[in-house]
Image (cartoon, rainbow, N blue to C red; front, side, top):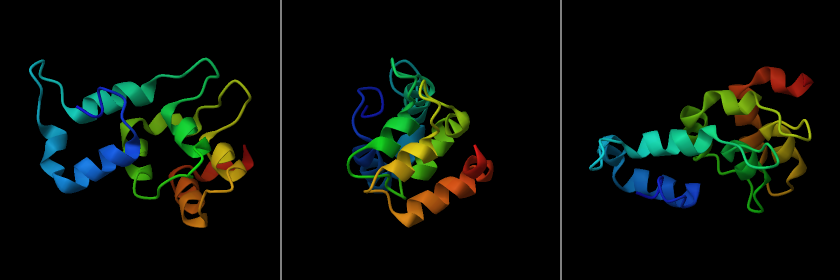
Length: 116
């Protein structure tokens, strides 16, 4: 499973697009790829950054097609401040590679973020 082994969200998105039913297929332990992704998305690193933060800060910018998958995996992560007090939208705003479309989608998911 790409979700279990920590592959990029871009690859996971590609695999979901290629075979949408794969998200509900259970492995030998009865766990689906989306459950693995939810587990990965719920953790934070030593900087207090969630998967959402890291994707927002990624050099290539947030992929608009990946945002809904990421949001669905852990809706609370969009409201989580890292150890520097930054939300994912702050990282995306600081990232020159982020598109206006991605920023607008982040605001749609968490409108209050523009005043935090």
